[in-house]
View: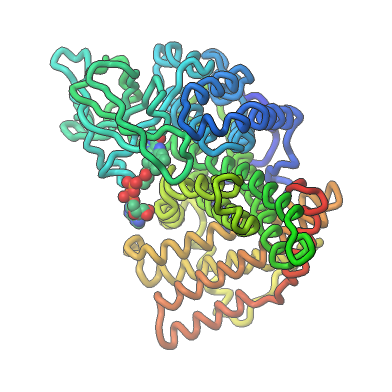
Length: 602
Ligand SMILES: Cc1cc2nc3c(=O)[nH]c(=O)nc-3n(C[C@H](O)[C@H](O)[C@H](O)COP(=O)(O)OP(=O)(O)OC[C@H]3O[C@@H](n4cnc5c(N)ncnc54)[C@H](O)[C@@H]3O)c2cc1C
């Protein structure tokens, strides 16, 4: 069976979402320390390209000089960076998903370019890789791999972004069955101002099967320049100003039937499966941006003097620097853990079987949403801290903190807003529990029996992070207990209690982040001196537990009252009880490390 190049073999396949009811071992999780030599090389090539070619062109990119962006994508393609996900027979390199995540991470040194690049190689190109006919793949993929053509993905409309299935754009099959006529308007389309090929989603009547006669979302490949297809004016945005964002207008635009992508009425599969990949890649790009911005903060803090000394000597500045570094460490841990898990599962699938590949990626949808939400919000905190470290200089265009701050914000909105992703996370949990796909109900049942039986036994863990493992075990119990209480109260109507769904999602997200940090530090400690990673894992375990405890308490207060609430809060206190770590000293230790090395370096 043919598998993907560079894919690490022999790693245990972990089921999507299983981290909630099991204790994965560090050795079964993939972290940056597990990169192969090939991975390191691609990281270096990407970094050198971004620093030497892209960053120096920042002013031109920001002024929307799209010729520069196109030229840079062409240069990237000569280095192989645009073809990582494209099969070899169509001009691609066909590498594993870790490689494509490494590219997304290290290219993110200039926000606008990073978005243009990601829209091209990810949501723009992948629909053809996965759903294209042989003819479509042969025609388009070599051009997209070489950067000769640029791709875009057009799902959103002015009245339907999150509610994408409610699109108004229509496609009607001609009487002779030779073409479709497209009418409608798409909005917010990245790369639209200079793209050559668009995956456009429109409602189209299904002719056969159970949906016959109904209009369902359908995807089409639309080339630029055709009659009846115009691109609207550029939007003027808060951030990523150098990326192109326009509407697309279709007025009786004829598309040959050969440009139907996938099946009529199955466009939602394409739209949503592509977004899973978009989400983990967005996470990696956010980590790359956070690493770079943290570096700016560290250097500025070292240089800036106030009250007769470097501001880096002040505890409150050190606290911000430490939080930025911890954010990058945890972001790397949970992002690469996720994509490594996907690769381990893909290693068991034939690389030509695109349906099986999608199924694997879809089975990690909950982790993909977690990565998207956690990393985008981590980046937002990092850019905020770094603006603060720069003081007044953080607020002016001349310094890098200002643009980083503006560029970060979009990540909470596109690829599914963070609210939608939170609903996906808890919705998935409920569905998996109901269907028995994940043994959540028995786990909740066991926990209820345990808490009713009397005082909870503290789980024994060994090793330097034993305390953090015990905290993690209780965090999982707290989440199961809270989710169980909420389900008992609302049953199927839980979906209508969005704030509760959101709070449960927050607990799940923080458990995954906390566990990823602990397992990464543990794995590092087996190979090297890991004093700083250990400190980071301790800081984050404490931070995550604070958030989990709060989300649980807030939820319990709304799902129960009177004696029931009092009993639940007693159990809550037992599960959340722990001796706090000295995070002030730990943050000082981390800050001193990054100040010594002059950058985030692990
Ligand atoms: C710079 C930029 C680039 C983009 N690039 C692309 C692209 O290349 N291709 C593309 O197709 N789209 C693109 N988009 C569109 C983007 O994906 C949407 O903006 C996003 O999905 C949100 O949709 P909306 O703007 O319609 O907001 P809405 O869906 O109207 O949401 C508004 C608010 O309501 C909340 N909300 C909506 N529904 C619910 C719900 N059910 N429950 C709880 N809260 C809800 C949202 O979370 C949000 O806070 C881009 C957008 C921007 C700004």
